[in-house]
Length: 335
Image (cartoon, rainbow, N blue to C red; front, side, top):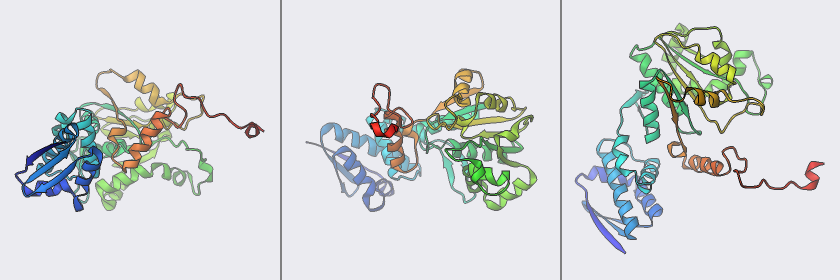
């Protein structure tokens, strides 16, 4: 059994780190098997020596974030704990990055993980950025935030958002309405992000002026897009031909961000994903960045990260991983 005492200068930082009803404190205790006691302006941490050391480093990291005005929640605590366990707590200070954008309600949009920060910085520095990773890692949200900021700074004149209208097991024909109505559900995540950044009224104003365009990928053919910030979302569902077509739309003064998750490809088995091909062809090219986000960068519910990790253990798509035999089918199942 080991115990250390930590002195804290500012009471408000302790309150922020502890969280509502000490929920963050309880989380650290549960994850590391330690006991943390508040003694006025000091914290006493007791338990196994190695775990106590990790708890101390995690609390110091959280206090650093709190001192800079960062909001400390359970997601923050879990991420800091993962950095500490992996010996990366020296990088916690790097999380204090710049604001990517401010939403219509005044909320600052910031990178919440080291992977997200590298992704946001890559978008700033490169003409073409590929953001590849699982659900919940902020690929689309941060790209839209960067586009809105570039538009507000007058670095670009238009924001163009597009997705391939490839169904995840459904067919477009079952949806009611005309073609635009049919593809709208596929573009909904992009609408939602834009609404949050601009506000509904401002968004509609820019949409009417043509400053914002949200359209299926097929509408990009034959165009040259100058002075635009172009985002291709769900790019894993593009074919090689579609991806080449999209990349060659790039005009002067424009930037492109391509996002996707190569574990969620909805193309027929005989089709090669354009995103996979682009990652291979463009990797290492000047003014092009390929950013690979992981489950550690997931900022949704904690279960999202666990689900991603569970699927990765089974080979990425729910199929048994290499070396793990698939369960045998019952004889009657083939009849």
